[in-house]
Amino acid sequence: MSEKVITRFAPSPTGYLHIGGARTALFNWLYARAKGGKMLLRIEDTDRARSTEGAILAILDGLRWLGLDWDGEPVYQFARAERHREIAEQLLAQGKAYRCYASAEELQAMREKAREEGRAPGYDGTWRDRDEAEAPAGIKPAIRFRAPREGETVIEDRVQGRVVFANKELDDLVILRSDGTPTYNLSVVVDDHDMGITHVIRGDDHLTNAARQTQIFKALGWDTPVYAHVPLIHGPDGAKLSKRHGALGVEAYRAMGYLPAALRNYLVRLGWSHGDDEIMSTEDMVRWFDLDAIGRSAARFDFAKLENLNGHYLRAMPDAEIVERLKALVLELPEGAPLEKRIGPEGWRKIERAMPGLKERATTLVELLDNAAYLFATRPLDLDEGAQRVLDQAGRQTLAALLPPLETVEPWEAAGLEAAVRNFADAAGFKLGKVAQPLRAALTGRSISPGIFDVLEVLGREESLARLRDQVHAV
RNA sequence: GCCCCCUUCGUCUAAUGGUCAGGACGUCAGGUUUUCAACCUGAAAACAGGGGUUCGAUCCCCCUAGGGGGCGCCA
Image (cartoon, rainbow, N blue to C red; front, side, top):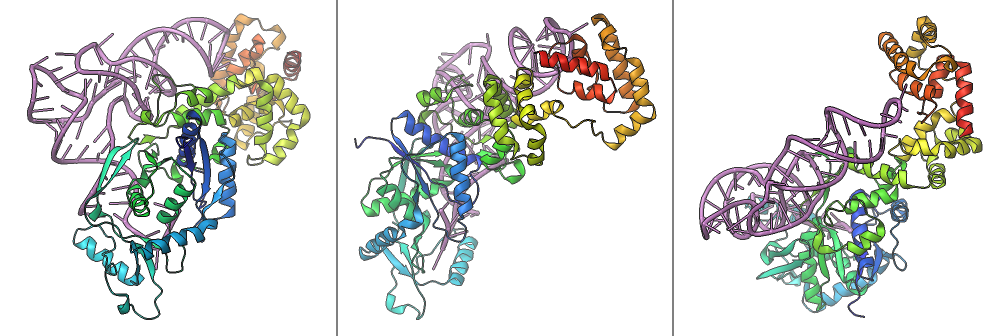
């Protein structure tokens, strides 16, 4: 009973659920599921200025979309401030914390001086042993944790191994602000303890926090949870993942047409592995996941691999389900509303019928929908100006002249036809590079490529178009 | 600046004190498909550098370089 694993995912609602957070959530979820434990969700909203309702919604939404559920109701950290304050007062009463009257300016000067002297730019302990009688009037004190000065704090991390911090490197951090609100490191310790968290799995940007939190745990006489600090995810260039890399919220990946299963599979392999296994079901992950197999080095985010996986899951998905997902997705796209209107019930039926040919050509849902455009395009087609001009001048006639009626073309003529079309397209500078290939598909009547309808229409091949439509509808 | 962490093909990674250092994505070349995609086959592609320890180091130790994280009355 007391051995039951309880993990938590603890995002701060200051933005969307980004890709690193998503992986952290996934790891926590997997570990809890793998060990038959629970994953709790805690919203760390103690920074009132930066926390927003919208961000909370985005995070919950992102988790749900990814298929990561949590046990019980989310815990809102801000709501527990009173409890945190209590603990701070308790530490104060026990002499394990003290009041600090230093002003912001003093602290700033302190940091600069320390930096000049080559020390860590932390708090110098001015009020650690100073008599409160000397406190300046009218200043509301903050409460600082009286951190040990001697010895070392050791973290036995399940991923990073044994990490040792010299206590002199860790300064006395504020646990209760002068306005009486608790700070992160205190809240985390109290909440992790009260929530019965057994395993803390988070990004390794929290490694030093683990040392500070360990000190607080000890001062309180509480057991520390097991720590597992997972390396961060970097952008394709190796630098920290940022907006410019597409370090977007998971909802952005949804909008780009990625599937939750693909993202889960991609994410789980970033920093964790199980032999040579690449494609694995969620059941496989749960069966195989363990902390010991998490690597210690940062991983770069690679869209190419994500796309490959997404294509795999797309092809494996039942047609009807893809249509359902497309319907849900279309409104998220730019110009989504008019697009949806244009597709209409008939369009969705056509898409589902054409799905076998569609889904094996697309790597994302968005690409698939794009490829399906010929099924519901507004006729006549709206060409861009340049293309229109080329066609008007000589192209339409010339090209059309090259093509005999489809009915009269024998299969072995197709290749020659293709070459002719391609040459024309090149010479005209018209973007008809794609003309030739779909044309051949039309001639052979098999595996219709997306776009052939548009091509024939542009060329004014009404009879061919009609024939092709019949073929498709016959399928 | 100080503290902590990391370093195997371009990318994600596996393995081992003695291997042709394996897989996947990507790339390239074939095949299949009279298109494309998918699929199949094949190829190129890595142990950061320098010292040790050892009969032997990619693997163990040290140093260097490079990368990352942290150093708030943010989380």
